[in-house]
Image (cartoon, rainbow, N blue to C red; front, top):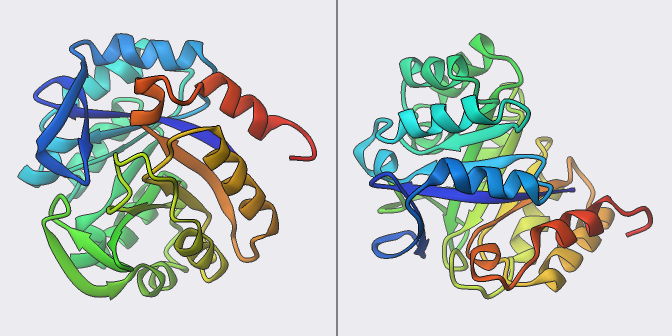
Length: 249
């Protein structure tokens, strides 16, 4: 199971939000490229980047910074989300060396765009499902739809989606632990591997998720994204990834 450090970009800086609120952000670094190198040095096998400005603008805003990170660390797979709502944006990121694009809002509102992206770039497309009480939210979490995460995951089963990033918005940035029940339910009812997100606060959260991943049916849980916990020093990324790599855990 992958432990994936997150870099959230806002106005060119590396920040973390609480429950997706742009007005409730903490700046951790004004050098995102350097920050990416720090996580690589600590054993990161993949990097999760979110263009927060892009998520609200509906088009990439911090794309050049993402491209700079990809150029600086070509050995580090990157998954990028935030404002990817047309093929031009997908092409920009893939051409820049990003490994995976995450389609969120457009996946809910324009599912055919997901199919088109999967056909153009096989194995490069991840769907981001962000949920409040099981219902999927869009537009930078500003709007909540009537669709559930499970319904959407099943809808994309035959599209060729590489993975689903599932975020419980109520847990995001709150250091309250992963919503295990909802994450496992989605994994068991989806034929697409799940990447859990939102709420990781300490190593025991990784331990619990790994145990759930070992027993879950369906496509399973392939990774977990962590943000505030590693920035605050509550979780050691190297230790967490080492635990997940260990046999028998």
